[in-house]
Image: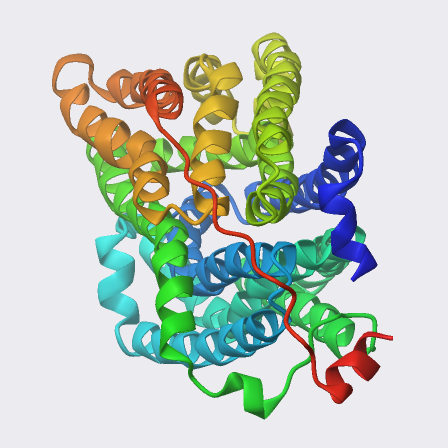
Length: 460
């Protein structure tokens, strides 16, 4: 248990760095891979290829977010169980996470395969983008169950206190994709299908890497049929907290439907291609905040379970300060080098000219992102599903979707881009006020459970 005990004793700054830096590196690597993937598609397939990826990724991530939701929700339960010495509950929670992830992921993949054409149309796959989007989606579906497993496992591994393993689980698929993209897209001239196969194989690689962690004997948790048997109280707790992540991704997917169709209506295929570039830059700009957030969650969960109130309060302050500071630096880079960033993705002069000012508009409120993400993650980490869900949906659901529908009526395509910074400002204000006015009740302490002989041996 040494890997988790440090959450309650180590200096918070050092602890956050140990957790957040590997998470940030993993997310940054994934962001770089996504950027390079789009660069290859932009230069060797064309703007329609960028548009196709823009349409498909929200669909595949909606399906795979089942694994992420189970991972995040279950990890909150795990962290608090480990902090409160409830080992049997920790083992049972992991087993139920495994069973839930695989059953649900396979079900929704089959549903996606059956309704492919309809789904692509709903998400804005029209005109010249429709056929490449269908080709890309059909292949990517094969890898979605593997992605769901990987996303669940990464959160569990981080909750166990192995942030470096979680980091490599994100780096491995990025490296695989970076190797396969030039081979499939350029050397073998497979076009958009090549990009899809490279991504699918990378998902399988990530799943294999995380599975190895649990089978190697390094993990405290073990995969066993006994623990995979459904425990409805645990499933309910995982689902309650995981619904925050699933609802967030669900709203992001609804946003994708609204946004893609609005972009096609006001800007045609070119509008979708511009957003394809913006979406990749968003991943890069958000990586330090997301990394700090992911590193912050198990620390909060453990200390909350152990009733260490001062440590919980301090880690929230430190996390927001660190994430905001790094976001300011990224904001300066984005504003200064917007034109150079646009040129990375395409040689189409018209697309470059249209994308450059959009980057400067969309990222105006980047420094405020830390407040809304970290505060939402705080409520999720301490097991408060209601506030976490409300705050998670604030940006996309309460602000961005209505603004994307409303502002173009007055400002045309520019109104869509203006919606992004306004939504960031609104979400940060709501989150800050909610956190400051909320009262947190800590759990009662319990005595450590007496583990069985087999459990004792498995930990030694």
